[in-house]
Image (cartoon, rainbow, N blue to C red; front, top):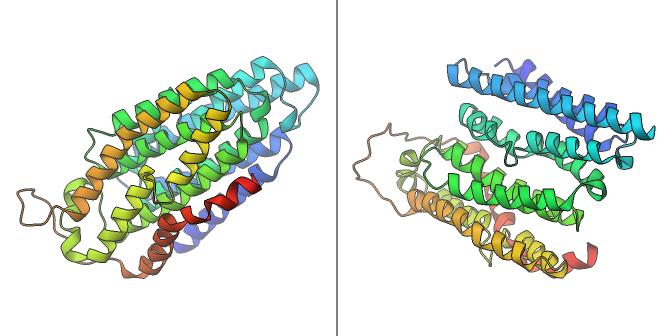
Length: 346
């Protein structure tokens, strides 16, 4: 892709995100979402491959439908209350339509079908954008309207997302699809707490974005797109493999690492809200995710060649990102010691 075109699309992406997260009016928030969608489409389909074109088409149709629902929800609310302010969403029908629209934008169950397919058809760098920065505007809208939304509906969708994200990731061999189901599972954790402590949702999203960025950049530097490609990683870049192992375990939420921090605080808050069964269900369902993270870590660090899997061997890695990966991985595994400071600020 032409560097100037890529620069324009990247700036448009940042502009759309900034417009949505800083707006108070529904029309400007909707405009920001549309700019975002139009800016990411060329990045999804930059390699002229049928799967990439299919991914871009699926993404466009889903996001266009979700944006139309956002607009319809805001217009219904304005019709009944005369308010266009995002925080003044009070009409029950509007709240229900908006919950559906944001679930479609994020890829929450039962509107999750598009996300693994789109991620599978995208390059790893675009997949990183889809998993992190493209989720920020919908989560911001969810944060701003959280007092008016139905907690029972959100809790049901969250538990289903965590269950399905863990369950569907078990049998995958494509790394991008595994990371897509990992994203759906993490979104379940973020959604369940939005009605009770919205700041915890933002904290969880920031931690998830940090760890996912480290994983995607590591995989991009070794050009790994399926599990069999990871199997020669240890002999080529042992330090990178060790960092990937720790980041994956952090993403799974194991206690000594950063990923445990948001899960710990969410479980604590759910228990305070007398939602112990929901907290228990989420904790048990996260074990499904732990299995496929361990599977990725096993392929990257413990499976040594020679082995019987046939695949193209790649002997070179893209070196320039290693410093960024080292910084992100360090943060991804060492933030837990500062956790006593966080409850005082939330």
